Length: 180
Image: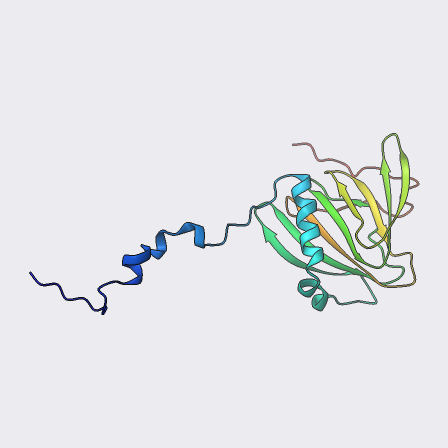
């Protein structure tokens, strides 16, 4: 029986190297999704380092903070926010979400209220990160004279933000919790 090959030397890429679809080592490794606080902080640092990704998206709004969702993944969201001088979040918590706040440009002031420590104020410059658990009560304000940009990672994705009203943090009271 004679065999005729479409290839002059009788060999093909598949016959030499094997089935290319069976080469999992050639495919890029899947990006693991973060599952720990350290993983979410590392994700925030990776996104922050990719200035070409986020800088063209930044907008400033004279009336309110500007924000845009950059990314979602299994159990998390990444948000980009801009802050003009004087803009702030007001006292709030993030419900059942944990978070990582990373300052990308400018300076922000975080005021937090924690049991035992009371009210604490921190100045956050570019590269600074704050990690918080569900129920963490804080306020973020641009108290400087220059605009600021920040990156926020929430896990699970942000579904609620409980405001704490005026006069915070002097007289913070937790919002009422509905019984089930």
